[in-house]
Image 1: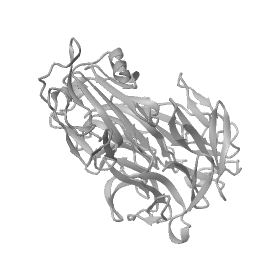
Image 2: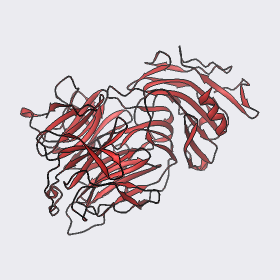
Image 3: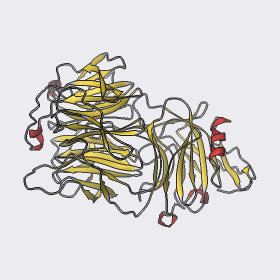
Image 4: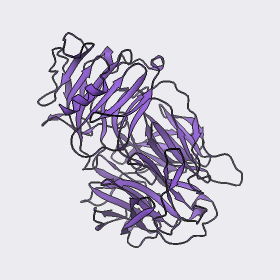
Length: 533
């Protein structure tokens, strides 16, 4: 990117690029660094479709890690149809899985939970970094961390069979790293799924049969099958009963509805914010297939089955459509979106597969000699998966290769299955929950600054700064978080383009406008001024 202008915000910082994106992708600064738009419309901002739209900006030595910079933009998320919000801007290479990105992370299909919802993140993925998992303790006295979910600045965990009363509780990670009991929504033995919906936290309950994990049954056989809304403290209000079910396994948000999946009695149900229920049935022969996991992708709802039926999809207005399977695949446990493609994890081999369309899935690699993939998470430009029976975590290393990242459950000859079931990204770290120890672990690896609450509807201004020692993330003029960085560890990004509307997870769905790039780090006051002018 050439720098010839002298547009200055203060004595030592110049604005070297300004893309209003109102009518095109031209640079309105004197530097004339015009972008190249692909599949983008312009309607009071650049409209990105969440699938193909990008604007490639000219190569810039300013943003490759050798120099400090500030980048600011206005954005509006549009994920109502069932797309992911995705990447706002990135300088990231998919081949090496390195570089930086500003993204809004939504993750559904993390086994049974929607773990992240519109969480703004600025991260820099490094080519080499140590991976050391940290024991975060056991919430209460649980045996399984069924769900991890980021909500309103905190991390929540739903558990199975708390030994204090054999009930399913929800816990919150406290300021001093203690687990705070948020109560048990009902008297069943599990809180199996957590989601954020319409600005509130929801929990589903279940009478879990531990024989599925080759463990002794819980003495608590009280039915679940309900959805509750969190009211704070230890208070939960009943939102809905799921028809004919004693166990709600999985939830997600799709096209403005809260979707819940029954487990032992098949069926999927869509609820509006008032609790009004619409039955969507179950996929497969005679609509009786038991299912495991759900996730929205490119305006469709995908569902994974556990009776040799593979994957189905639908919209709210259309019935289930078969999307294919692989051999062997007895159960589909999780979905992930990575590098703009849908992936699934299966049993009876811990292998990921990528959807190629037309009912075809391609091999995405095997995690060691493990038998099942469950928890799966996009973490700062890289993909991690949790497994059974040894309780491992693997990181995708490219070219269908997975490398061992951590062993979260100790070997025990008396325990047949050890699971890494749940995952979430919180506070710049990847969190994972296990069975049978009921522990939570976390991994801090590359620099990642996170907004641990959802971005609301409407226009917002994000700003990111890099000062050679830290990366920092701002939203609407306020500092959200920062992370230290070592420039000597950065990869070479000279030949990696700067791209609007794309990130490691997926393309952006929504609008972007008023993009500004500065050749130094603006002060907090100057960043606040950008948001209020």
